[in-house]
Image 1: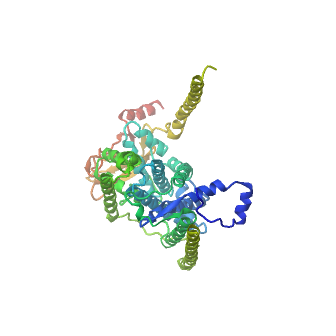
Image 2: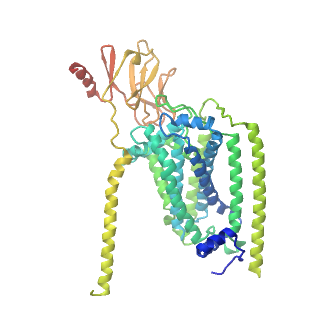
Image 3: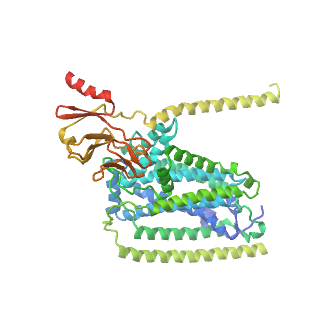
Length: 409
Length: 163
């Protein structure tokens, strides 16, 4: 393969490493990936943005682990302690809570764009399978993390969620036992959800990411189905130009998360009490709402069967959508996707306009929580982010200019 | 060595032996793993529970919750004069949320998917597929014996007679 990039003088660290390791094959592999620039190029940013949120979750989650105690007696109190006593605990926890929503949101958006542009079509079936596995793992991480504060909301969401596989024939009871660590949702459930949330599922997700990223790196970016070569403005190297655009977006996400964490810090909720009836307006996280609402309107076996079939259909989608695999349009599948999306959106909206849970508003009592100081800090943070994004953008333009000179000459 | 052909089949033989051995090892590991993670030996609920008068003495139209082992138990005194005592497994038959008694309406309510039960446990409205399960009860002097299985009620009397 011809070298696409000029040889810039290596900096000290890379030459120090370069004297000890042959970095040439790695550099070659990195330089290999090109990103097609067209009117929908923004979709190539979503996976990276989700990756950034995942890394943030690992960071804030590790910090929360310093104080969180996964037992029935201590879980809720330890979360309250993080929020109200540990210096900046409220901030770390709020970043984690908002980060989780962003992570799932970006993963879902990434999923939808890949779905509609048919990026799963041959030869990228394996990338799709690894991606879908990661989507399910992400939902699992979200679900298991939701229980950990052990408040009313999380307790009942977990009761319902873990009972859903109970309607499966033969293995149902076993799966419910496996998820709950017994017949009921108890302290044993907290402990195993904790293990799943902080080690088991993130490790699997990390492994999936390695596979996913390696496949993307080797195969390059997919062009939306039906987009002609003439619609591609140019092929831009991922390293460094597109990666710099990624970095700009990551900075912006960090800023938005910090802003939300300050203005709308995560609530602690009322401690779960198995002796209290479920409070009205009980709801799971937004990304499970459409399923939760569906179960109200259809018999449970029908609902669970429907979700399972839907998940299987999506998982093995590239093997059903054979037309897309041949590079032809597949309007039937577009129809199916639109119906599915419409159904999810309608049920989400139904749930969102319904009455929410009534509970007393909570005020953070943390001594380090001070809105006025926070706002000043926020202005500073956004100043730095603006500065960074400005110069990152300049850097990207400069790299593009040098590349074009090199290509032209 | 006979031919290249036998060399190939020899490799295949070795490969399948190693593969088969690993598969057996893996399959053998699954049994303890499933038992371990599934926590299949969890405690069964108690045979019966003996309630003192303070625990089940309720004014008509009132209700309270107690734990029967790990199972939430809803005790309701129906609102008519000298109302009947009803004791339910307070677990919604739809998706396991804990149900509660609504005092003014004399109904039992599950907030998760808005299911309503009557005070005989029957489904009035909403998605619950089955009526609420009731506990069996039998007075024992000043106390009340409560059990999930009817035959266990007798055990309480037999045990106290023996002891």
